[in-house]
Image 1 (cartoon, one colour):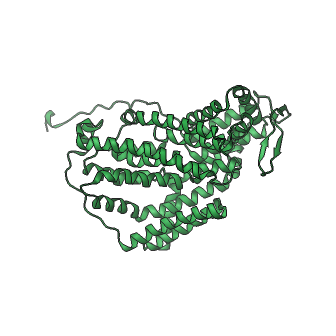
Image 2 (cartoon, one colour; image 1 turned 120 degrees about the vertical axis):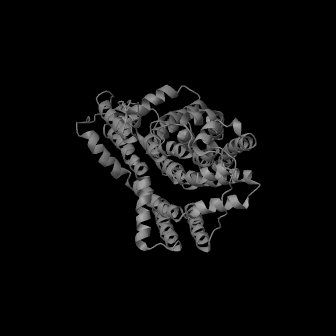
Image 3 (cartoon, helix red, strand yellow; image 1 turned 60 degrees about the vertical axis):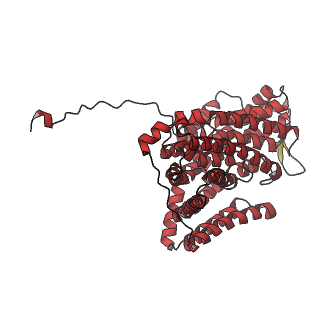
Length: 474
């Protein structure tokens, strides 16, 4: 063997890149800062009273300093355990519902359903874009469809590219669809339900206005994506990812094979739709909450597995897989509650409210409502979990809303818009970044593409929060 037959490889040390801290690191840092703040912030408390409707509210002007113990070295570590215990009902609900959807995902029925729709719309496939986005938006609004979009991107990306669309469209259909539905949700238990519970409002109350807002918000998002998809279908070279798509996937002209739902698939879909309808009926007519919803989701998981001809062990294994996928989101709730426990035990939570009251009380209430929305929007970059952010911020925002004259329903609306819009923008959103990676879209190109829609959504949400305030929505 001569020198020409050998190749010498020179290894270079990998360059260290800046990585954003894990969400648990961020939240535990907040717990430590909360413990430190007990030495920096004077403890104090408001008086509270119970209204005729049974709601506990802050008595304006009643703030006074109090004596309280400061945190010690063990406080931040105990706070995690205490937070898990405080949020246990929410955490277990997330585990059970996540496990049930793990079984549903394992059947592959939803993916088959999407592919079957594509085949039936051959030649008119642009209709597929708004139709699929509407389904994803309904999922985001009812059961918090978010992380599950990754599985749909895996199926939709090659299919939509075969139909002549680009990778941005493939990512946008699930991400923007579910994201818009999630942001303007009318009965998402992880955002609206949890926030209303903390605000001591009837579960999923204000449904009529929320449904109207959902229709407008989702309609705007669908129109934006559909218009883009139609333009790219007609003029492929206008795509921001035209060159990268061809480098990654080549020029594909074949059409996806037709797939039809079997009798078993239709039964599985019926069980899924029936579960959602049962929960909606129970919540609206009988006041169901986390316990009842958990029971229905568990029953759905078992029925779906049985109808898909899975054995008991197989159902259990997929149930555990679903829990694994949702585990981080569930445990975030406990960490977030831990921050509040430190602040409450040190009696400085009301001091923070007192300072915010002083900052905002001189402003018109409508500007305070918009300020709440913007605060939630910024916080979502650090806490990209709807349930975690609700647990962290709503105990602060609800008394503040009472003090400055903003209704609690408006405060919940400001939270859900602020939490939802940035979910498909911020790089700290794990499922979003994973979805882009699966679709083959870089974050920088995605941001350049979605910026006009994001600005439109921010303006629309600000207008909706303002209108809710002007209507004194309660």
